Length: 410
Ligand SMILES: *Cc1c(COP(=O)(O)O)cnc(C)c1O
Ligand SMILES: [Zn+2]
Image 1 (cartoon, rainbow, N blue to C red):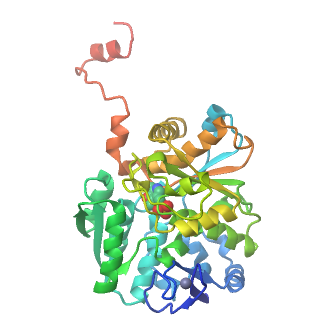
Image 2 (image 1 turned 180 degrees about the vertical axis):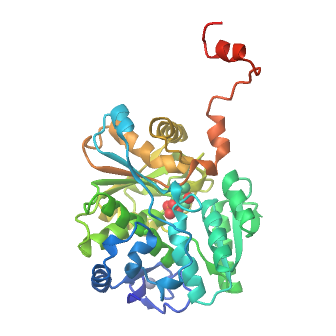
Image 3 (image 1 turned 90 degrees about the vertical axis):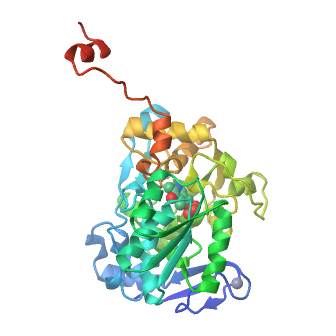
C-alpha cells in the first residue's frame, strides 16, 4: 500500500485518514489525498505496471487504499481514446481525440471514483453509503454498493434526473429519495445527514473518489504514448472531475511516466455557469447560481462543491472556463453521434461544444493535440436523444411500400 496523507487544500492541515472526513476541521475547506509520488513511481515501475491492461487498477500502486486486492471492481476505466477523423474534417482541426467515458460499467466516469470510494467505505467499516446526485453518481454508487453489500441511500432532485440513470439506481436496489428541490439543496442535506447519522458520503467532496478519477489522465497519457495532450476540454459541474484530471496529469508527469501537462478548458452550460463567470469577471469568489438550468442535467449545478479545487487547477494549467448554450451542446451531441458513432449524453458533448466554439472564435491552434472528455453515455438520457431525432416512419409490410418510401421505382 502506498503511503499517503489526507490534508486540507487551503491550510494544509493533516487529517486522520482512518476517519471519514470531507472538510478541514480547522478552516472548513475541502480535503485531498496526496500519495507519496516517489514511492508510487518506484513500485509501479518495479511491478511492471506498463504491461498491464488499461484500467483504473492498472495504477493500483498510486491509489491510496489499504489493499488493492480487496477492491470492489466492476472493470472500470480502460475507456477508448478515439481519434476523430471525420470531426477533424468537418471542423478543420488536425488532432482531435475524444476520451469516451460512456463505456464504463454504469456508463459514466463516476465509476472510476466509486470503485475507490466504495472500497474505502469498507476499509472504514461504514455500513451505509450515500450521495446527492443529478443521476450518474447515484447510478454508479448504487451498483458498487450492491457489489460491496452496503446499504445505499441516494437523494435526487425531483423530476430532473434522466430516465436511464433513475432506472439504474432503482434496479441496483438503492433507497431512492426524490427531493423537492435542486441538486445543491440535496447535497446540503446529505452532508448534514452524514455527520448526524454516520453515513459515508460519496459525492466528489470525498477525496478518495478523486483518486480514482485521476487515473483517466494517466490513461490519456498512456494512450498518447507518454505525452500529454496540449489541451483538455472537460465539462464542469461540481468541478471534481476537472480537478481530478489536473491532479492526474501533474502526478504522471512528476512520476516521469509522461511528459508535460495540458492546458485545461473547463466548459459549463450557459444556464449553470458560476465557475465560467469567475473567469469572465476575473473574480476570486464564487457567486452561486440560484436556479441552474440546462439540458445537460449532469452539469446542472449552481453551487459547485469543488469550485476552489477546479478553479485552482484550471488557473494553474494556464487555462480558463467558459460557456456553451444548450443548442451548442445538442449540436455537438449530434456531431459525435453522426460523424463518429459516439453517443454521449448531453453533458458528455459539452466539451466538444466548447472546442467547436473556440475554433469558431479562433481561440485555439487548429493543429493542437486536443482531447475532449465525453463523460457519460447517451443511453442515459433517451428522451433528449429522441426529441431531437427524426421519428421512425410507419409503413405497410409490403415491398411496394418500402420502395415507395425509399424513392425507388414502383
Ligand atoms: C458528474 C458528471 C459531470 C460533472 O462532473 P463534475 O465532477 O461534477 O464536474 C459531467 N458529465 C457527466 C456525464 C457526469 O456524470
Ligand atoms: Zn484547513
